[in-house]
Length: 95
Length: 416
Ligand SMILES: Cc1cc2nc3c(=O)[nH]c(=O)nc-3n(C[C@H](O)[C@H](O)[C@H](O)COP(=O)(O)OP(=O)(O)OC[C@H]3O[C@@H](n4cnc5c(N)ncnc54)[C@H](O)[C@@H]3O)c2cc1C
Image (cartoon, rainbow over all chains, first blue to last red; front, side, top):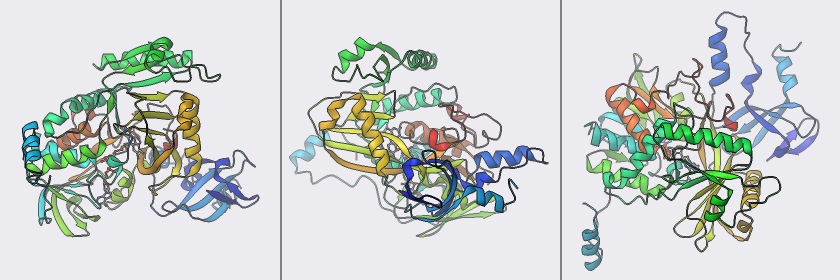
């Protein structure tokens, strides 16, 4: 599988490690009301779709950036790759 | 029709014209007491035990393809009960005991072969861990033997004992472990359940769950609506998809696991061997092919085929352990979709929807669990209480911190 890295171009998936659903970017607020419930869902529950899946890949043997890859879990076709940093910032994280 | 040596002889003399089909091909009835979704090993075993042990006959098994087309027909057929943790070991030992009486119970030759499972260790720390595991197994009534290097050498002199990085320091042997003909397990359970009136309905995909006032009333299928008093879901890699029909999100990711078979070779391995320094396990089929496998591919997948990097990884481990394998030609390879749970252990439990029961999260090790899983799921469906050996397999254990994490990896399914 080849992952088109937004900065480095096409890279072999073997250079990356896999983290799972990109929803993991949305870490709940540990101080908020109902944090225990929210963390249970965050840590354990997954959509696990057969089809398009937005997921986190870490370029461990490369530039060490985190990517959000949109991939079809039935065919492995990759349709979009973003820097996780940009995705997180767009959602109001790490301002 | 009962199978026996006498029947075999009779049919041989009569040109084998008297054999009947092993199970019927019924049209779905409008309604059943219990509908089981998924005609894999677990669904079929559940149906058999419901009918034979819990007196339930109005039962149907709905399978979207043909029975045995899922993981029950794709695995590397290893059975064992060498777990460490309390929630697991009694369950897997119960399963091994059911395997030991399975063929008599089903009147079917499933080629249960207790040829021994040997886990190799390559360091002192690993050996210490095996001592602990072996003791835990024995405390739960299973068998375990610790072997030193020489005892391993006597069994398999051709292993690479002096590998510079991974010398073989001994192993943990479970003689009662072994292999079982996987397809025959599906067929044997199907035949036994069918003979007690269970309808096994193939080419019948469940497309929706009918739920009224928080209670399940039936299922939508590619062959029409089927009413149900209770619904048991046992669909392995498709667990999240089917449970999503009830609006539930599971602690599960689907990942692909590959397996490999070489051309037929002369007898070389009379048991099962696992490498302790990488993920590689190997046995030899009765036809002579080396059957082996290793790690899952590592990212969510519903493709029943894998990618090449893991092939390389598996084969490298194989070469480190037994360089002779480099001379064997690979004949076939394939993949199956695993229901990888957040702690690497399964779930057999009720769900927030009344009458809807879930069996899944088997990861890459659910074949050995087939009899106990069927028995425990049948017990739960029939009595609404958990089977004593499966009481820890709760759906809400993650929330309460009661994980059963054999590998100690945390909520990261691709590491289990
Ligand atoms: C390569 C490989 C090697 C393995 N090696 C081992 C091993 O050595 N030892 C071991 O213990 N375990 C092993 N396993 C794991 C084991 O095979 C599985 O955990 C186990 O078979 C899962 O249970 P099952 O048999 O019920 O699953 P399956 O046979 O997959 O049954 C599930 C069934 O549900 C059906 N289904 C899905 N969705 C629907 C729907 N909507 N409607 C109707 N039907 C549906 C599917 O078609 C399928 O037939 C291995 C798995 C693989 C892939």
